Length: 203
Length: 182
Image: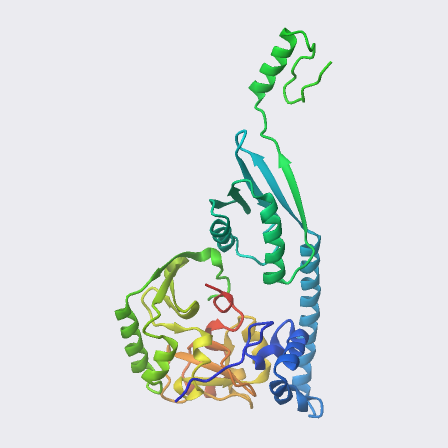
């Protein structure tokens, strides 16, 4: 006795005969028609001609409503994804060492944990997740930009997501800034005093 | 029960010994006499180890070949994943059938009420299914199972009382367990 082969819908992951009860039924139908025309015939062909009783009608109506709602939600989600931006930030660790921080990946249907493993495998560096940001060790901004674009195309079918690169200098600490200002005054090049929380202004 | 299960609930994954796989197969054969050893070998090949995924609240999931096959609370009965259920013909399981109207609510996560089973499209479970047994729920006009639940009333009671919860739904299409990927 062989196993029963069940065909699962690629869109909603349900067995195809339950696509009706999903929130993306129209999309499912289109997919089925394209990929498994025989199944589609069997499930939906004689539906219109069949006279439906009161109860089924009611069910169908409420299903349609549900679908509409879901569609709106999906649309919004997609828009969010299109509008969102991935920020790749290069942080200066020491003079010659950089690390990369990738922001804004959480909107996409990607598994950050798996992604971090992928990154560390591909680029042979350490990669960790720090509150929804990926932090990679090494100056890899260019390589990562290419890789992320490719990844989004393959995994999520999204194209043309904005990727922005930022280079952040290592922030100077308060003490360092104060010391610098003091040194400048002492050498006579500047008369400005360092004010806490303010940028160094040159007179 | 698995409605809110997400990836965050996973605590860790570890491979199991092959002896565990052997025992599991034996247990399944005892429980579902209509299954054959060859079928099980196909789903749980000897070469591929079963992995145990531990989750919150003493829930353990058993997966093979990156597909979850069973869930288990504490050391209770194994609750088969629906993908596993779909691989076998309906005769293998203790089953019942609900009418069309009930499908939507079940997929929304509600329990099964008596009228959904006693109405025209439903099939009442046979007498050898006892209260507390795992039952597999099929639907009118559909081929695949849509949920796994625990029977709360005997077939006789469902017929005579026709009121209240008949099956407590544990796992259904589209819930957290169904959508979980490992």
